[in-house]
Length: 109
Image (cartoon, rainbow, N blue to C red; front, side, top):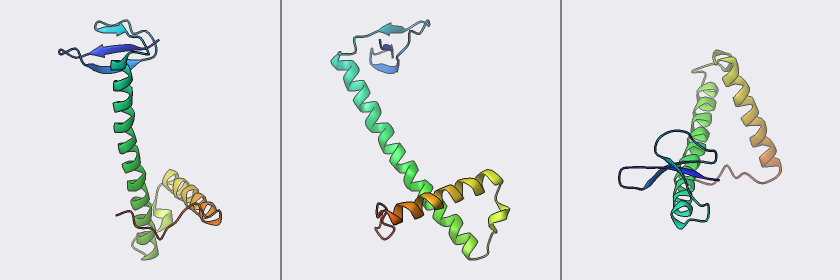
């Protein structure tokens, strides 16, 4: 049961799958073309940002590795949570290379 919040022009601005007891929220049929268009637009926009975030994370991971390799920083200088995430990422990348699912040679640009 979707609920939507509209702007002054009547366009959907937000949605919720649970009832919202605040002014402006209204029930809408899930099969509504307007609702389906809103979902499609929201998913495509968030997908773009998600892909961009993934690529940026990869760049930052490579920058940190480069700084460590060039002795600009030490791995142990990083906070423990950052160390843990970097080790996890390196492990995932190594496993991906072993399975031939990651191609580090392909340029992103």
